[in-house]
Image 1: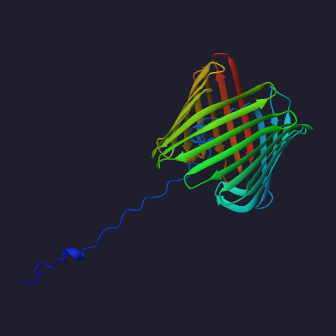
Image 2: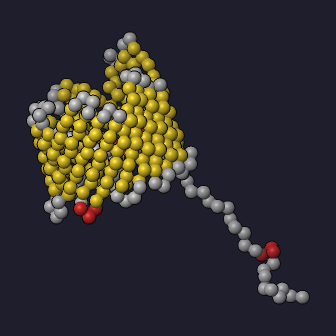
Image 3: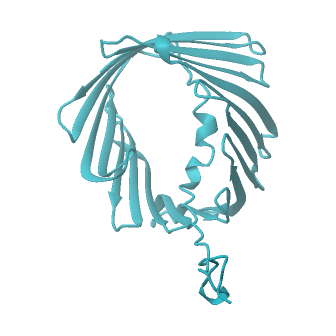
Length: 308
């Protein structure tokens, strides 16, 4: 009797192949663990600032900044940046050279290089007029699901002093990242090391990060409520200074009005807010900020104009 139901024999049924698991993502840099939460908080503003940006070519741009403040002397800064042709992401271009010089001749400079597909290098220099203050060299290797970084700060072979910082991050799942930081410093008559453990959990709409070590603790929580509202909570404890700080910040975007509002409240009785307003079709951005510390009875405000 034939197969009247039209079913295929058992031996000819197609078999499902094994599910291919997606590879784990790279966790990024150790310095960017708390970046989402920190971007919610407003930047301190004081005095009047004028910034003029000028793009000279697809690789080179400059910026002129004039700052007038009641707390310090008026200052001028010249900022120049060069970006190469190798673009790995919208925010990563190699090689990159960035420099900032003020009216007194002090210089801050950074050089970013891509030595290989996964190996990056960075050099940072800081001078005060004709005297070197800081020189730092970083090497970062980014694997498929981990990142390892080694930093040398102010190496002095003659004075036998150096600061070494090692970072390592590993993606355990698509949401969980664990790692650590080891800071070693040495100078004549003093030597020590500090170990810090770190963890980061990323959900669809929120990110929680924690750093714990002998030097203290740093915890942050970032939540994106919708396209317009973002909030962040940050807690920092320093065992050496015996000080703890709790901060709450929020970020409000009003696209129809071309406005961005950021505010903060912390445990030191400090409140602050910054309002940014773009003026299309003109390439002008206005910013107004005010900060009040109730505990120390201090108030300062600022206003800035950015062109370009």
